[in-house]
Length: 426
Ligand code: PLP
Image (cartoon, rainbow, N blue to C red):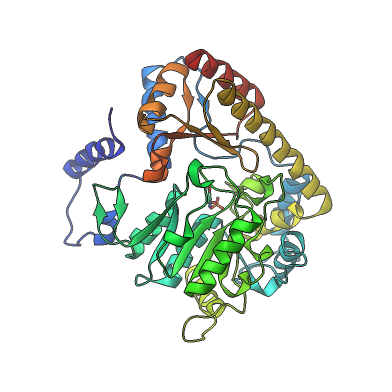
């Protein structure tokens, strides 16, 4: 089986032959990155498959991109804002770098009601992914970080780019200076903190991409306690909080004491279908201080003002409409349709006798294939069913033996995928 780096290096060879060499050395951190970023790699596999089977009806349950149209109440608010930009009264130029205060307050009320988060602690962004990078820039290259293994690839890759990661070790598939907190079915997808070394930063994503598991209140209390005992900062990614159906916390700030040790990043992408519109936010509590007592929020504000300049005013108008009572209700209807898809996929694999995880609190289903390599499973499913999934290995060494299936898609496509998968694995 062709591995991702082989495909990319062949492409690179071609580009090298066609190009012109400057005298600029390549950033050594960029050289340390492994493979191409996972999702473009999956797109390339899809293109190759399309070339091989031009008439096959491909079903995409791979990259976690939303598919359902955005409710008109939200798009009409954006359209109105856009038309206003062509009028003298409605024209707006640069806004506040931190975002529109009305939206910041609406986020505080909607998602952090009673949790003591103020609008002034919320920074509006152009998406969680961009704030992951800005937070890495904030922390710099001298901090050491821990990540869940498997985890969303951007945490590690941005750490590599900024120079935190150290050498890549082929034998383990891990970077020397990153602590990998293994999360698997045996430990209920929560790391054994008694064996986890201290790091400065702990990236923690719940509900988790890719495992689909949401950490319980008790587990998050342990995590906050661990960070407090070690003087660490948790960067908590709650991009999928809207998918939680049980009593798992939707924010790290539901945990007492978290304000002194945590930053939270979140997004309108999966909550509102804004993957293309681009809107997210980051909460930095005022109480969070560096070892020299300097407030982290002041430095983050500096990074945002220097490197960003604020989210699009059009996207922010849409964000406000998402948080109106009608907008919020409509979005929950959309999320319900993805939940139905998740149940169909979960039940399909469970009825075939697989060990299946996730799906209940997240739009991702995590299926185990004991003893198999995940890229092989991905390739076999694609070849025999024309269904795109994601190989678990793309999320770190802890993802080997698993594949991730996304519940984003239309119901008919999901039902058809379920039929094909049942035929393949019966
Ligand atoms: N965090 C997690 C865990 C994700 O899965 C994603 C996207 O899939 C992101 C962040 C990026 O979100 P955004 O579209 O807001 O940049």
